[in-house]
Image 1 (tube, helix red, strand yellow):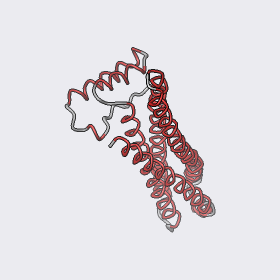
Image 2 (cartoon, rainbow, N blue to C red):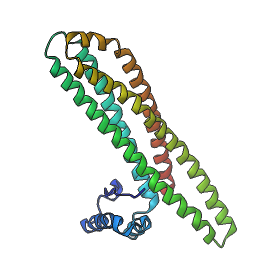
Image 3 (cartoon, rainbow, N blue to C red):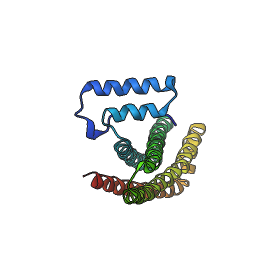
Image 4 (cartoon, rainbow, N blue to C red):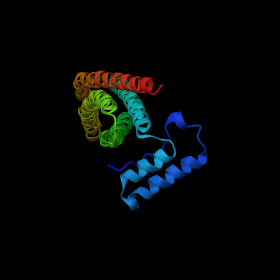
Length: 233
């Protein structure tokens, strides 16, 4: 997958504007050049190494999951409130729930995009690390670096599995939300509200599972970031 993320990692926010401009130009040129390696080569010339980009992407993915978790919780609260309102305009209720569904879908897509970005830079980093092991003249240093690579890859594998597991929990929740929104849209009457209430328990159960998985994934991301930052210090 080709990286098009042009946001500078927070640790580099103090760099000159000209460096950001160069990064933007590099990202724009990528589709024409068709060469992902040029992106990373250009970034490294400016001091943005794959390791730092990976940590930054993990942070962004963690933050996206945190935002998605909060949005799903908010959507459930709004969903519950709307279904418990007696009377009122049903069209208004539909529009309220549909807006929550669309915001939830947007947050879910942001999570998917961030996870893709993490995988992208991580694959490039590990491939480079693996290739550079052959460049050592010292067998002891090569062995030590290989061990560190194995350890880091193991930590990364646990992290990406947790992220993917949380990602898979989003679709069932979104499907439930969409079902309720469509049902309300097609049955704008008091009977529809009564029927939807019977589904509330199922929606709540799915969201609670999703939130639990996201919290586990966020915890894994925090541990990974902390581990990488300690090694850098």
